Length: 179
Image 1 (cartoon, rainbow, N blue to C red):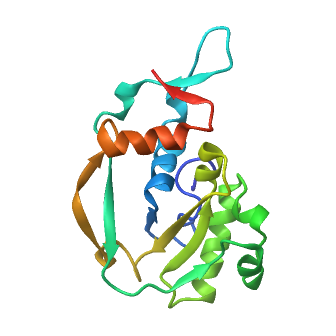
Image 2 (spheres, helix red, strand yellow):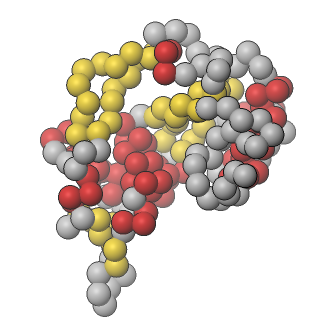
């Protein structure tokens, strides 16, 4: 049975299982790496409300720069108008009920079977950066997947250099620091 809290917002359902491939801008991808994968690692400092992440938790984490090599057809639900065209509300798509967002994504796959996936605003970028959110896409297989992209350059480690700068930017307005 699909877990309400594990996995991505638009993952497949028990009734419509499919693999997904999430892509995003570097800042959004970094935010997602933190808030999806590291929220259990955030520690509270004694006697304060400030939170921190141990820098050592970044070791081994990288992000890749990708370039699409095939044209993508994406259903754009980044704003109210786009979402309403497909019988959804932004509140639903950005809410915490992943069973609901997954059911809606399954509905979208049936309604637009030739589309490769969804273009949406990542709420993880909103939480971490204090902004509207970053653009992200979920590509739904088997019609689309990693074969639509090629890697540009080497993996970028999050523990140093440009990767660490992205991490610090993602954490800037969140009240979470590195220790």
